[in-house]
Image 1: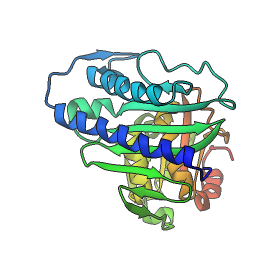
Image 2: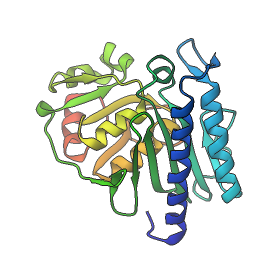
Image 3: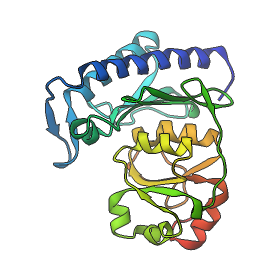
Image 4: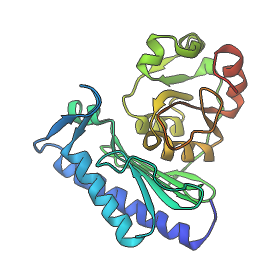
Amino acid sequence: MKDNTFALKKLEQAKVWIREAGIFLRDNIHQRLEISHKSSFSDLVTNFDKKVQEIIIEEILKAYPEDKILAEESGKNLVSFDQSQENFWILDPIDGTINFVVQQDNFAVMLAYYEQGQAQFGLILNVMEDKLYWNNAHHVFCNNRKLAYKPKELSESLLAINSMIYRKNFYKLTDFSLKTLGVRMLGSAGIAYADLLEGKIVGYFSRLQPWDYAAGSILAGKLGFVTKTFEGEEPNLTDCQYIYSLPRHLVEQLIQETDVIL
């Protein structure tokens, strides 16, 4: 991230916007939900997903009308601009909608910002715990607490893995997980990335859309994690892809013991 006042100004504004979204969700979480399905019966969207997205997009465009936005809901989820030339935001208004609906917990609001294709900052708000994960040019924070990665071996750690990947031993990742203390399935990429940043899990494997991993990959990268596709490529911020985030020192072991490609 370039340490300039322009990007830092956007960071401070984004922190306000995402916290206001969290307040709105906490204040209204017991209100009546309007729930509809997208691609399948378990792919849900609520009136609150749409409202939060409207609030944040309105704030972005009011302050920066030339910026582009890639967002999960309301038709703004197609990349129709040159990522290498534009300043753009990637928004997930409620990550973990099923958790939001069923548990009223374990969901997040996520926002990432890029300038001419260069990642600037990521924000993940664990809404119900009011924990905001964010980065500046040099460090990652949870609220005002600076985070640091403490290296762990697989045998001392937990992994977060998508349930379908785990059930099918996709890319031999179930076998790989047997070298750990166990697997967690959290139902929210944002919560998984928060746990990764806090050291509660050591790696995260899932099938993700850009708005699921953009903020988390920026934050994790600041702490020394590698985020790539299972085919060894940089995520393209365009398509749904199989994505992993893992500490750099464990990547070679991953490549040797699974079908994931370096």
